[in-house]
Length: 295
Image 1 (tube, rainbow, N blue to C red):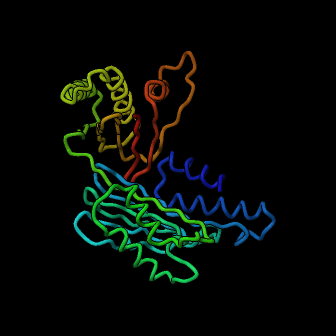
Image 2: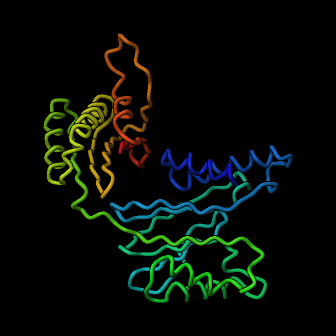
Image 3: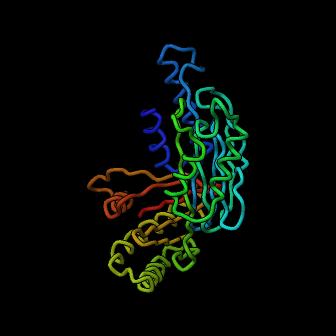
């Protein structure tokens, strides 16, 4: 499980879609099974539910591998299970995974859990799911209090033989005032005006201390997108209380990579500069290209 957790973190860092991430994870479990001396199926296995939430669009993408679907608790309605395509447990190999996308209202709670929470010796899964929904529907309290209520409702006093995990997450969206977007024509002469617009936006957000770094990062990424990417090109700034993210998207699916420029090279240092100036950076493939996102 330690190796699987490390693999999930690594795959998550490269922004794979949930169904694609589960496919890579399934391949890893098959290899681990083969290393353990099995025939590659069934010797080593696990279940997984993977979700990605976008606070700007307020949409959540999920995929599962043999794991119970989460329960959704809207802010103004009763709890209900999320309808997700059924995926095989990790380690079966060769079978596809599918993602589902949900639009979530502000303040929606998602309850993720293992089957040990709802199943037991004296209770079938349907009865367990009913008790879970009843506990989640109780009004008031923090997420910690809701977790305690669920565990006290479903777990027997003497403990359970199966492992139990429960995670409650409440969605918070970013308001439109914290997002700025520009569509950029593929003209190098427009990079300077774009930098000026970015500086004006940072002044409106009272983030002038980040202006020097943001100006350099925007200049490098937008210039690279114009030179090597494909139109349409889009720049998006996102900020919350602690983080400023700069996203540059284009329709060329080829992702950039760091390289060490030689002394006489005229270019090749832009992405290295971005990596040195920011805390993190990465790229993700989209349906129509890629997005580079330093923060």
